[in-house]
Image (cartoon, helix red, strand yellow):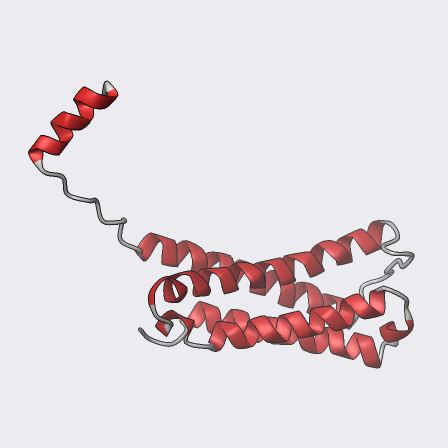
Length: 156
């Protein structure tokens, strides 16, 4: 198994951009002082960072099922983090979200939208590509007599 592909590496960078942008909003933008929203921003920084690191880790080298299951699960987690942040932003622009309403498109919001959308799209493309490249599951071979017996017993 090789390391992460180009799409995963770019998605990891995009998620790190999400984390950096939200950390800046949390500290310099004073979002930490906003009840619930500050906590959600801190959780988003942590989640985006953890998923970005996991995307770069050679999880495909894990033995057995873990090696097959971990990479797509981490990609789905990245899509959830990025997509969840985008949805929360769009909701907060239209109505209040936990008593908070975002207004205007300043540079931090444009960077957040670009990073979140890039991460979600890159990971979606990576999942689609890895799904396409996967060989079909092996079919269990049956002896000629076992097929006949199954038909007799099950009516097929």
